[in-house]
Amino acid sequence: MARKESTKQKNEAIPTIIGAGITEKWYFTHLQAKYRVHMKIRPRFFGKETVFTLEKKLSEVLKDGGRAIIVFDADVSTWNKAEKERLEVMRSKYAKNNRVLLCDSMPSIEYWFLLHYVNTNRHFGTSKAVITELVKHIKEFDKTETFLKNQKWVDDMSADNRLETAVQRAVAFGTNGESYTNVWKAMQELHIIELEASQENHENRIDKLVEQDMLYFILGTAISADSLVDVESCEGALKIIRELKEDFPLSKLKDDKKLKARLDDAEQIILRDMEAFKNTKA
Image (cartoon, rainbow, N blue to C red; front, side, top):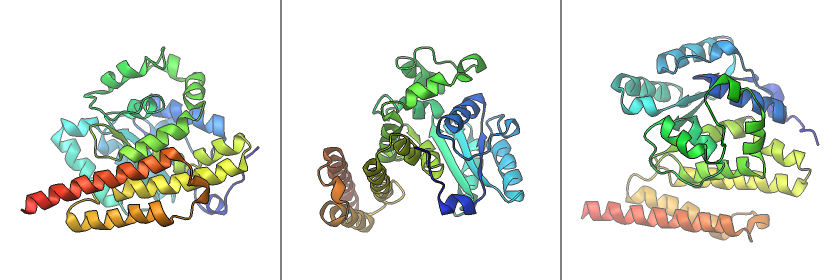
């Protein structure tokens, strides 16, 4: 069943994908073909992976009145002080700009791919380390145009609800661990999760996905490192989680064991951090 365009999409500029290289270019090209997503993918918006280059391309899109989704690897900021400072400035500069969506991954976008198969946020020092794990699941994966231009690897990776699973894992991990990815935000921005459900022709599944995405977003926000900074913020987050467990009006999710487990895990994380803050004060 074809996706119905929302009023929001019709009224907004079509987003332009800005990426660091051919991996991002081909990945989003295949998503566009697979899900018939409205987005602009132009070769000139893919190139060297430096914050300066990415922001220069971003400025070009904004100058033309467009919207931008920037997909890039954050690993360079761990060993290049100048790039780290530029990245922090860019994050701050566009934090409240609703025409800019930053979708970084640590160490690289291949970690986002890996989440389709493995539930982990362990330390990966480099993109190469992630790829070593990824090839166990995508056996011929290779960062060359010869491999990447074939749509099958994206089709296979997105099959069997793996894309939805990757989103859930990425949101649940947040940005606290050794590895993280914000590419899931692009999936929501582009309504790809909703598209996948529509193509399966299950209206009840669409409703459930919308509800799940809302819940995972709240969970990710409530237990993020930016949110849990002292005892008071932990108490506030704990209140949110407990209200979700008791009163959140998602009747279709009441029997979802995985979601209940997520809520229980979130509560334990907050309680643990609260205790740590109390001990620090003592």
